[in-house]
Picture (cartoon, helix red, strand yellow):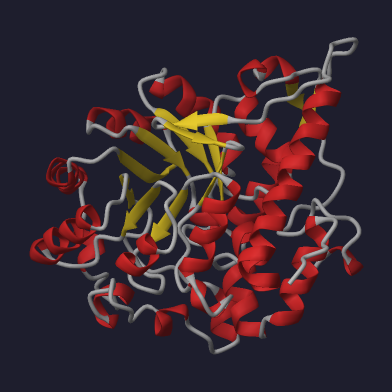
Length: 370
Protein backbone atom coordinates (compact mmCIF):
# COMPACT_ATOMS: atom_id res chain seq x y z
CA UNK A 1 0.00 0.00 0.00
CA UNK A 2 1.26 3.43 -0.92
CA UNK A 3 0.44 6.11 1.63
CA UNK A 4 -0.11 9.46 -0.10
CA UNK A 5 -0.92 11.75 2.81
CA UNK A 6 0.55 15.21 2.22
CA UNK A 7 -0.14 16.74 5.64
CA UNK A 8 -0.53 15.46 9.17
CA UNK A 9 -4.02 16.95 9.11
CA UNK A 10 -4.96 14.36 6.48
CA UNK A 11 -3.55 11.63 8.70
CA UNK A 12 -5.64 12.81 11.65
CA UNK A 13 -8.78 12.87 9.51
CA UNK A 14 -8.09 9.35 8.24
CA UNK A 15 -7.56 8.15 11.80
CA UNK A 16 -10.87 9.67 12.91
CA UNK A 17 -12.63 7.93 10.03
CA UNK A 18 -11.18 4.57 11.08
CA UNK A 19 -11.81 4.76 14.83
CA UNK A 20 -14.96 4.30 16.86
CA UNK A 21 -15.97 7.00 19.31
CA UNK A 22 -14.61 5.34 22.45
CA UNK A 23 -11.25 4.59 20.88
CA UNK A 24 -11.02 8.09 19.45
CA UNK A 25 -11.78 9.61 22.84
CA UNK A 26 -9.13 7.46 24.52
CA UNK A 27 -6.54 8.59 21.99
CA UNK A 28 -7.37 12.26 21.54
CA UNK A 29 -8.86 13.31 24.86
CA UNK A 30 -7.57 14.12 28.32
CA UNK A 31 -8.76 13.93 31.90
CA UNK A 32 -11.81 15.71 33.31
CA UNK A 33 -12.03 19.27 31.88
CA UNK A 34 -8.99 18.67 29.61
CA UNK A 35 -7.42 21.86 30.95
CA UNK A 36 -3.96 20.30 31.14
CA UNK A 37 -4.32 18.97 27.60
CA UNK A 38 -5.25 22.44 26.34
CA UNK A 39 -2.42 24.09 28.27
CA UNK A 40 0.02 21.72 26.59
CA UNK A 41 -1.10 23.07 23.26
CA UNK A 42 -1.38 26.67 24.47
CA UNK A 43 2.21 26.64 25.71
CA UNK A 44 3.40 25.91 22.18
CA UNK A 45 0.98 28.41 20.64
CA UNK A 46 2.30 31.16 22.92
CA UNK A 47 5.84 30.87 21.58
CA UNK A 48 6.87 32.76 18.44
CA UNK A 49 10.04 32.37 16.41
CA UNK A 50 12.79 34.99 16.00
CA UNK A 51 14.31 34.13 12.61
CA UNK A 52 17.73 35.12 11.34
CA UNK A 53 18.18 35.82 7.63
CA UNK A 54 20.97 35.74 5.04
CA UNK A 55 22.33 32.48 6.40
CA UNK A 56 23.44 29.67 4.08
CA UNK A 57 20.77 27.02 4.71
CA UNK A 58 21.37 24.94 1.58
CA UNK A 59 22.25 21.92 3.75
CA UNK A 60 20.16 21.16 6.82
CA UNK A 61 20.85 18.32 9.26
CA UNK A 62 17.96 17.21 11.50
CA UNK A 63 19.81 14.32 13.11
CA UNK A 64 20.49 14.06 16.83
CA UNK A 65 21.70 11.67 19.52
CA UNK A 66 19.97 10.43 22.65
CA UNK A 67 21.72 8.25 25.24
CA UNK A 68 24.27 7.23 22.65
CA UNK A 69 21.75 6.37 19.94
CA UNK A 70 21.68 8.28 16.65
CA UNK A 71 18.27 9.43 15.46
CA UNK A 72 17.16 10.81 12.12
CA UNK A 73 15.15 13.49 13.94
CA UNK A 74 15.06 14.28 17.69
CA UNK A 75 11.72 12.52 18.16
CA UNK A 76 11.05 9.27 20.00
CA UNK A 77 7.88 7.22 20.02
CA UNK A 78 6.32 7.64 23.46
CA UNK A 79 4.97 4.55 25.24
CA UNK A 80 1.28 4.09 24.47
CA UNK A 81 -0.91 1.39 25.94
CA UNK A 82 -3.38 -0.71 23.97
CA UNK A 83 -1.93 0.16 20.57
CA UNK A 84 -3.75 -2.88 19.22
CA UNK A 85 -6.97 -0.83 19.22
CA UNK A 86 -5.41 1.48 16.61
CA UNK A 87 -3.85 -1.14 14.32
CA UNK A 88 -3.98 -4.97 14.37
CA UNK A 89 -0.20 -5.31 14.86
CA UNK A 90 -0.29 -3.10 17.94
CA UNK A 91 3.10 -2.11 19.33
CA UNK A 92 4.91 -4.16 16.69
CA UNK A 93 3.64 -1.75 14.02
CA UNK A 94 5.14 1.22 15.85
CA UNK A 95 8.48 -0.50 16.34
CA UNK A 96 8.68 -1.36 12.65
CA UNK A 97 8.06 2.29 11.79
CA UNK A 98 10.73 3.46 14.25
CA UNK A 99 13.22 1.00 12.79
CA UNK A 100 12.54 1.93 9.17
CA UNK A 101 12.55 5.68 9.83
CA UNK A 102 15.47 5.69 12.24
CA UNK A 103 14.35 6.79 15.72
CA UNK A 104 13.99 5.31 19.21
CA UNK A 105 10.84 3.48 20.23
CA UNK A 106 9.70 3.38 23.86
CA UNK A 107 7.45 0.35 24.32
CA UNK A 108 4.66 0.45 26.89
CA UNK A 109 4.31 -2.40 29.37
CA UNK A 110 0.57 -2.38 28.68
CA UNK A 111 0.58 -2.75 24.93
CA UNK A 112 0.40 -5.85 22.74
CA UNK A 113 2.01 -8.12 21.62
CA UNK A 114 4.43 -9.26 24.32
CA UNK A 115 7.65 -7.36 24.99
CA UNK A 116 9.59 -10.29 23.51
CA UNK A 117 7.52 -10.32 20.32
CA UNK A 118 7.91 -6.57 19.86
CA UNK A 119 11.66 -6.82 20.43
CA UNK A 120 11.93 -9.48 17.72
CA UNK A 121 10.25 -7.64 14.85
CA UNK A 122 12.93 -5.00 14.25
CA UNK A 123 16.55 -4.28 15.12
CA UNK A 124 16.30 -0.66 16.22
CA UNK A 125 17.30 0.23 19.80
CA UNK A 126 14.25 -0.01 22.04
CA UNK A 127 13.41 1.33 25.48
CA UNK A 128 10.98 -0.55 27.71
CA UNK A 129 8.54 1.53 29.76
CA UNK A 130 7.45 -0.17 32.97
CA UNK A 131 4.42 0.67 35.09
CA UNK A 132 5.20 -0.51 38.62
CA UNK A 133 1.83 -2.21 39.00
CA UNK A 134 3.01 -5.45 40.60
CA UNK A 135 4.82 -6.53 43.73
CA UNK A 136 8.62 -6.77 43.95
CA UNK A 137 8.76 -10.34 42.68
CA UNK A 138 6.70 -9.31 39.65
CA UNK A 139 8.97 -6.30 39.10
CA UNK A 140 12.09 -8.49 39.21
CA UNK A 141 10.52 -10.90 36.74
CA UNK A 142 9.60 -8.08 34.35
CA UNK A 143 13.08 -6.55 34.44
CA UNK A 144 14.65 -9.95 33.81
CA UNK A 145 12.43 -10.34 30.73
CA UNK A 146 13.34 -6.85 29.53
CA UNK A 147 17.07 -7.53 29.79
CA UNK A 148 16.76 -10.96 28.22
CA UNK A 149 14.89 -9.48 25.27
CA UNK A 150 17.71 -7.02 24.62
CA UNK A 151 16.12 -3.66 25.41
CA UNK A 152 18.68 -0.87 25.52
CA UNK A 153 17.17 1.19 28.36
CA UNK A 154 14.41 1.23 30.96
CA UNK A 155 11.78 3.93 31.46
CA UNK A 156 9.64 4.27 34.57
CA UNK A 157 6.47 6.36 34.40
CA UNK A 158 6.01 8.28 37.64
CA UNK A 159 2.75 10.22 37.18
CA UNK A 160 0.23 7.37 37.42
CA UNK A 161 -0.01 6.81 41.17
CA UNK A 162 -3.80 6.77 40.85
CA UNK A 163 -6.15 6.18 37.91
CA UNK A 164 -7.42 9.41 36.37
CA UNK A 165 -10.95 10.22 35.24
CA UNK A 166 -11.05 10.54 31.46
CA UNK A 167 -14.52 11.77 30.69
CA UNK A 168 -14.54 11.09 26.96
CA UNK A 169 -13.98 7.36 27.39
CA UNK A 170 -16.29 7.21 30.40
CA UNK A 171 -19.13 8.82 28.43
CA UNK A 172 -18.53 6.34 25.60
CA UNK A 173 -18.63 3.46 28.14
CA UNK A 174 -15.23 2.38 26.79
CA UNK A 175 -12.21 1.45 28.88
CA UNK A 176 -8.64 0.97 27.65
CA UNK A 177 -8.05 -1.20 30.71
CA UNK A 178 -10.06 -3.91 29.01
CA UNK A 179 -7.08 -4.12 26.68
CA UNK A 180 -4.44 -4.22 29.42
CA UNK A 181 -4.61 -7.98 29.94
CA UNK A 182 -1.68 -8.93 27.70
CA UNK A 183 1.31 -10.98 28.74
CA UNK A 184 3.18 -7.94 30.09
CA UNK A 185 0.44 -6.84 32.53
CA UNK A 186 0.14 -8.51 35.94
CA UNK A 187 -3.64 -8.62 36.05
CA UNK A 188 -6.55 -6.28 35.55
CA UNK A 189 -6.89 -5.36 39.22
CA UNK A 190 -3.22 -4.43 39.54
CA UNK A 191 -3.32 -2.24 36.45
CA UNK A 192 -6.50 -0.33 37.19
CA UNK A 193 -5.61 0.02 40.85
CA UNK A 194 -9.20 0.29 41.94
CA UNK A 195 -10.32 2.51 44.80
CA UNK A 196 -7.16 2.03 46.85
CA UNK A 197 -4.77 2.71 43.96
CA UNK A 198 -3.04 -0.68 43.84
CA UNK A 199 0.73 -1.13 43.80
CA UNK A 200 1.36 2.05 41.81
CA UNK A 201 0.05 4.25 44.63
CA UNK A 202 2.83 3.12 46.98
CA UNK A 203 5.79 3.74 44.63
CA UNK A 204 8.31 6.20 46.10
CA UNK A 205 11.76 7.56 45.28
CA UNK A 206 13.17 4.64 47.28
CA UNK A 207 11.39 2.26 44.91
CA UNK A 208 12.83 4.07 41.91
CA UNK A 209 16.36 3.68 43.29
CA UNK A 210 15.86 -0.06 43.82
CA UNK A 211 14.47 -0.56 40.33
CA UNK A 212 17.30 1.36 38.68
CA UNK A 213 19.92 -0.60 40.60
CA UNK A 214 18.28 -3.91 39.74
CA UNK A 215 17.96 -3.10 36.03
CA UNK A 216 21.49 -1.82 35.51
CA UNK A 217 20.35 -0.18 32.26
CA UNK A 218 20.32 3.44 31.08
CA UNK A 219 17.37 4.87 32.95
CA UNK A 220 14.60 7.32 31.99
CA UNK A 221 12.12 8.77 34.49
CA UNK A 222 8.93 9.94 32.81
CA UNK A 223 6.31 12.27 34.28
CA UNK A 224 8.52 15.03 35.74
CA UNK A 225 6.74 18.39 35.97
CA UNK A 226 8.75 20.45 38.49
CA UNK A 227 12.32 21.51 39.12
CA UNK A 228 12.18 19.88 42.55
CA UNK A 229 11.43 16.44 41.09
CA UNK A 230 13.93 16.95 38.27
CA UNK A 231 16.66 17.40 40.88
CA UNK A 232 15.53 14.26 42.70
CA UNK A 233 15.45 12.34 39.42
CA UNK A 234 19.07 13.23 38.73
CA UNK A 235 20.04 12.40 42.31
CA UNK A 236 18.44 8.96 41.86
CA UNK A 237 20.50 8.27 38.77
CA UNK A 238 18.19 9.18 35.91
CA UNK A 239 20.07 9.35 32.62
CA UNK A 240 17.07 11.08 31.04
CA UNK A 241 14.49 13.31 32.73
CA UNK A 242 11.23 13.07 30.79
CA UNK A 243 9.09 16.20 31.08
CA UNK A 244 5.52 14.97 30.76
CA UNK A 245 2.02 15.29 32.19
CA UNK A 246 0.84 12.16 30.37
CA UNK A 247 -0.53 14.23 27.51
CA UNK A 248 -3.02 15.90 29.85
CA UNK A 249 -4.48 12.50 30.69
CA UNK A 250 -3.62 12.28 34.41
CA UNK A 251 -3.77 15.33 36.72
CA UNK A 252 -6.13 17.97 35.37
CA UNK A 253 -5.41 21.71 35.79
CA UNK A 254 -1.65 21.25 35.46
CA UNK A 255 0.74 23.45 33.53
CA UNK A 256 1.68 22.71 29.94
CA UNK A 257 4.95 20.84 29.60
CA UNK A 258 6.53 23.70 27.66
CA UNK A 259 5.72 26.00 30.59
CA UNK A 260 7.60 23.74 32.99
CA UNK A 261 10.52 23.00 30.66
CA UNK A 262 12.71 26.06 31.47
CA UNK A 263 12.77 25.43 35.23
CA UNK A 264 13.57 21.76 34.65
CA UNK A 265 16.39 22.59 32.22
CA UNK A 266 17.87 24.90 34.85
CA UNK A 267 17.50 22.28 37.58
CA UNK A 268 19.05 19.44 35.56
CA UNK A 269 21.92 21.70 34.47
CA UNK A 270 23.22 19.29 31.86
CA UNK A 271 23.49 16.32 34.22
CA UNK A 272 20.93 14.27 32.29
CA UNK A 273 19.23 14.32 28.92
CA UNK A 274 15.81 15.98 28.78
CA UNK A 275 12.88 14.60 26.80
CA UNK A 276 9.57 16.46 26.42
CA UNK A 277 6.14 15.37 25.29
CA UNK A 278 2.65 16.86 25.44
CA UNK A 279 0.86 18.53 22.56
CA UNK A 280 3.46 18.10 19.81
CA UNK A 281 1.68 18.24 16.47
CA UNK A 282 4.17 19.62 13.95
CA UNK A 283 7.83 20.17 13.21
CA UNK A 284 7.86 23.69 14.58
CA UNK A 285 6.75 22.34 17.97
CA UNK A 286 9.80 20.07 18.04
CA UNK A 287 12.07 23.02 17.29
CA UNK A 288 10.52 25.17 20.02
CA UNK A 289 11.14 22.44 22.60
CA UNK A 290 14.74 22.02 21.49
CA UNK A 291 15.30 25.78 21.52
CA UNK A 292 14.26 25.89 25.18
CA UNK A 293 16.62 23.12 26.19
CA UNK A 294 15.07 19.71 25.48
CA UNK A 295 17.40 17.14 23.92
CA UNK A 296 14.56 15.24 22.30
CA UNK A 297 10.78 15.22 22.05
CA UNK A 298 8.28 12.38 22.13
CA UNK A 299 4.98 11.80 20.36
CA UNK A 300 2.04 9.79 21.66
CA UNK A 301 -1.20 11.02 20.13
CA UNK A 302 0.52 11.86 16.85
CA UNK A 303 2.11 8.41 16.79
CA UNK A 304 -1.24 6.68 17.16
CA UNK A 305 -3.04 8.92 14.69
CA UNK A 306 -0.51 7.65 12.17
CA UNK A 307 -1.06 4.03 13.22
CA UNK A 308 -4.84 4.42 13.10
CA UNK A 309 -4.67 6.03 9.67
CA UNK A 310 -2.58 3.35 7.96
CA UNK A 311 -0.61 1.18 10.39
CA UNK A 312 3.17 1.18 10.09
CA UNK A 313 3.07 3.07 6.80
CA UNK A 314 0.82 5.74 8.27
CA UNK A 315 3.23 6.34 11.13
CA UNK A 316 6.25 6.42 8.83
CA UNK A 317 4.46 8.98 6.69
CA UNK A 318 3.66 11.10 9.76
CA UNK A 319 7.36 11.06 10.69
CA UNK A 320 8.37 11.99 7.15
CA UNK A 321 6.01 14.97 7.20
CA UNK A 322 7.29 15.97 10.65
CA UNK A 323 10.85 15.86 9.31
CA UNK A 324 9.94 17.95 6.27
CA UNK A 325 8.24 20.54 8.50
CA UNK A 326 11.38 20.70 10.63
CA UNK A 327 13.62 21.20 7.59
CA UNK A 328 11.38 23.97 6.28
CA UNK A 329 11.23 25.78 9.62
CA UNK A 330 14.95 25.38 10.30
CA UNK A 331 15.82 26.89 6.93
CA UNK A 332 13.50 29.82 7.48
CA UNK A 333 14.84 30.30 11.01
CA UNK A 334 18.40 30.45 9.73
CA UNK A 335 19.74 27.30 11.44
CA UNK A 336 21.28 24.28 9.76
CA UNK A 337 21.62 21.80 12.63
CA UNK A 338 19.80 20.94 15.83
CA UNK A 339 22.64 22.10 18.08
CA UNK A 340 22.32 25.67 16.80
CA UNK A 341 18.88 26.10 18.36
CA UNK A 342 18.74 28.20 21.53
CA UNK A 343 16.32 30.45 23.46
CA UNK A 344 17.42 33.31 21.22
CA UNK A 345 15.22 31.86 18.47
CA UNK A 346 11.93 32.05 20.40
CA UNK A 347 9.98 34.51 22.50
CA UNK A 348 6.60 34.72 24.22
CA UNK A 349 3.68 35.91 22.12
CA UNK A 350 -0.10 35.92 22.17
CA UNK A 351 -1.85 32.80 20.92
CA UNK A 352 -4.11 33.41 17.93
CA UNK A 353 -6.39 30.37 18.33
CA UNK A 354 -8.22 28.79 21.24
CA UNK A 355 -6.14 25.84 22.47
CA UNK A 356 -7.38 22.26 22.09
CA UNK A 357 -6.02 18.98 20.79
CA UNK A 358 -6.38 20.11 17.15
CA UNK A 359 -5.63 23.81 17.45
CA UNK A 360 -2.55 23.88 15.25
CA UNK A 361 -4.51 22.72 12.19
CA UNK A 362 -6.83 25.32 10.75
CA UNK A 363 -7.72 23.17 7.74
CA UNK A 364 -9.51 20.47 9.70
CA UNK A 365 -13.27 21.08 9.17
CA UNK A 366 -14.67 22.90 12.17
CA UNK A 367 -11.09 23.19 13.47
CA UNK A 368 -11.81 20.30 15.81
CA UNK A 369 -12.66 16.62 15.54
CA UNK A 370 -14.68 15.48 18.56
